[in-house]
Image: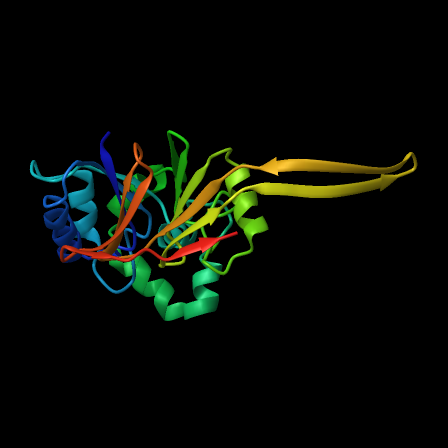
Length: 236
């Protein structure tokens, strides 16, 4: 089965994207490239990268893109999210960062950014920038197993690939049971629900990206100079 490459955090850097594309050509069996948001950012003019993503070169692995936190902030500020504005960006980084982001993207690309999906469901996998709750939801190796399970079950998937934390990790929920008790006028009821084995994978950011083989369920963390990184495992 074909392997997937999962990338995020390009932040308008065309040179970085070309470096990743060159690196992917050295990886056997990689036929799908998913860009999980943060295509843009305030530190680079993003127009050349956005044009390349929309119009891949013949030698490129064609990218399938979704929107991320930076896209959400820009679209909100430019009126594509109703009355919402880039409040999170303004609060965290100030007015100058909001203006820098606006200046980094030509208005001609806004309709394309607004057309991007929130995420993909492929086989039994969810590919999302944040989580099933919100594009800005940050899942990390320290997140509670109950939170991770909630994010997985909302989409009824066994694997959730996330990017917003910028970290590379693999957390395996190894099964078990959730026991709940409900007390009402008729008395107390006890329920037990089996928890299947499920996984949350942080794909990294920028030159740090992830390869995934759906056939073998093998995850490989990669730095775009040809170096594979050891996986960080966790269990819940």
